Image 1 (cartoon, rainbow, N blue to C red):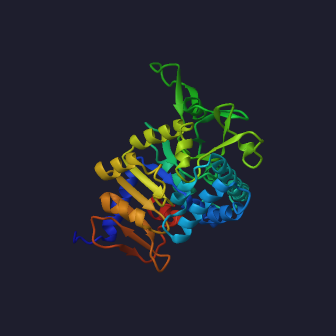
Image 2 (image 1 turned 120 degrees about the horizontal axis):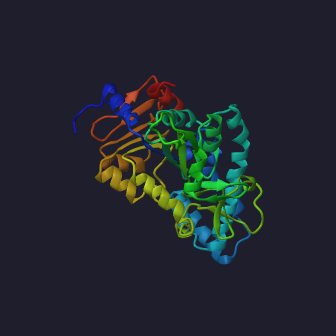
Image 3 (image 1 turned 45 degrees about the horizontal axis):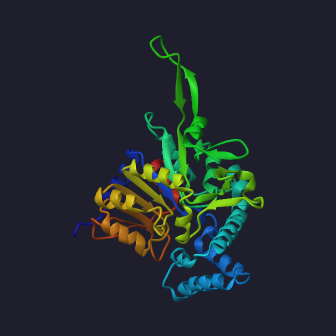
Length: 363
């Protein structure tokens, strides 16, 4: 289509995302903006080093298939992991992944909560929560990330949030109970009002369908325990789903989390993707295809670098917009498939979440 994209058109389209309550999905790009150790390449290097020994012949063969696919360039890390079928090896990979991510997560936990450093999407999410309508006070946010950097940022920004777990030392999975933590009972106002009413505060409903550093299986139940992030007791199984399809087979136990996520996606018509590369076929699934391709819902992708998968989605979804950096500089570019050109914004780095927030939501 020979229509030129101008700054006015792009800015108006992007501003419209914030007239509706969006569903927010953030990926490893948000953590990597803080430290590249949270990215898949760093995890791949760690696993290569750790899995060089101590395996059976069958496990070695499966791991060798992963390495061969990676070295040949035929697969990315996540799809190459599909060669892992051995359950013992899968569990070892889960443990290695968890201990690696937990080490880096722990290094940032206090500094983010204390405000010494920022998780880059924190101020954007705070703005979205503040803008929630009185009739619906929850912002649905989802991530495949195992780390808790977002949760530390919510603490820093004083954003109430729930993850579906409730209780004390071992928190059990029950959204209805979890929601009570963001509700209070207040006296009604005026003579005609009922004497007591439930009032909900604005909050984030955080979905982590791949699990988290603090989720475990304990006595056949899904639980959350922050004290076990770094020091998991022997015999306790982590409820974390690592790259590869074996992870989807493990999901039958954790199906409740994925079902909750799918329902949330289905209830929205506007979507924002932050630092998300569209590699995860479990999270950008058929429900998203239906929403963005068939229903032509609005979507906004803010990420550092574009890639072929993002551009494939852009071609098929006419109301999807991309903000990323220019190939040869840190300046911005914006794209939507209805227009013939990339719009270059040469004086701003809008793919940085804080710069984007300042530009469109007033800091």
